[in-house]
Image 1 (tube, one colour):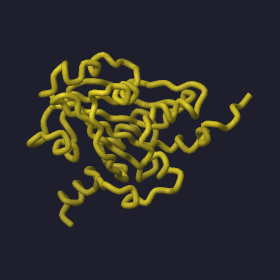
Image 2 (cartoon, helix red, strand yellow):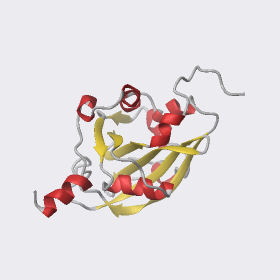
Image 3 (cartoon, one colour):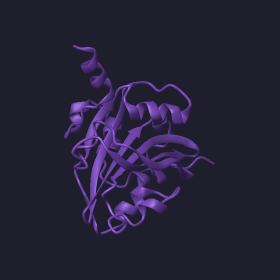
Length: 197
């Protein structure tokens, strides 16, 4: 394999339509395939849930993303990155992109989210169409794995499981990718379990 192809293989993920293709554990499979809002699922499993915004700005779309949002090639997009934290522990790194062609009427809330949950907003808006989930295992060299590790200030084990979903509102497209971090295994798995005193 050439050096270029080798680089592409570790910096671009293979996204699959079926979760079996990424061979998750039963526990991880539950997180990957759940159709409910990830925010609401996490809220039920911790005492305090918080969104920590890392950045929101214009940036170059990733090589394995541009086709999903109907761009002809790699171009600038609006990008938002956050950590989803349970009891001050980051458990999910979330990355969202919106093409610059989208208007304020397509996504009126996107520019003013701050540290509010995007997922809660998407699930609560009847005008939002939600696509099918896709799944991947990210190598340590994938840009989102690199950014997640930088946000945590530590190396992360590879591969990292991730899922993504395309949303449409009006003529606007929005792609959300969620990367599941190792600390996810430390939170309460049963939302009905007794809370610690």
